[in-house]
Amino acid sequence: DTAVSQTPKYLVTQMGNDKSIKCEQNLGHDTMYWYKQDSKKFLKIMFSYNNKELIINETVPNRFSPKSPDKAHLNLHINSLELGDSAVYFCASSQVWDRGGRDTPYNEQFFGPGTRLTVL
Amino acid sequence: GEDVEQSLFLSVREGDSSVINCTYTDSSSTYLYWYKQEPGAGLQLLTYIFSNMDMKQDQRLTVLLNKKDKHLSLRIADTQTGDSAIYFCAESMRGGGNKLTFGTGTQLKVEL
Image (cartoon, rainbow over all chains, first blue to last red; front, side):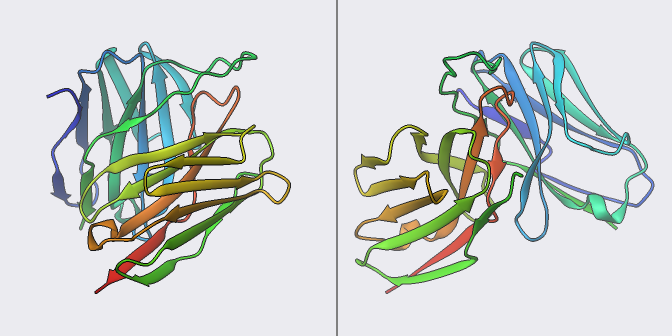
């Protein structure tokens, strides 16, 4: 099936640990994203990569380090986990990246199923 | 600013129409979107509208955009129990690197 997949679906860990969440898309897209959804369901972008290059970094603590080994993968590594990191993390991908030209293309983002991270 | 606001909760009877509202503050929005999130699932794009349009219809869904008031709405005709979910509006802006700014989400509950 063509899709955006994430592993693991659930992740329970202790404060202070280091963990990674993996994301893969087989849609042939150039751009990938990480979003965080908090306990109140508020969704906010964290990072965006285009062709393995970091494009957006939205004031995320440097304990969070995205890594894109290739265009189809964008992994999220989190060091020294804190209670406030508990959330659902969504990966997404889209075909092209908006460079801000006059004709901005419509560019649907496809979301993965999410990873629920619980820090105890 | 990038504030996108929605009412938190909406309850309707099956078969009625639902109207979910969204207000945004940034007038440079290029596209506006409606996403649906079912419990324990990811986000599913329902529909979108380009900022130079004021209405878009897609089967049971009607999107209205009032740029002057920065108001977006989603009308679901003949609402079914399967429409129960959280609905998010979102905006993207030219040169924003495709960043989606999401609204606060509206929980739609459809009662029999």
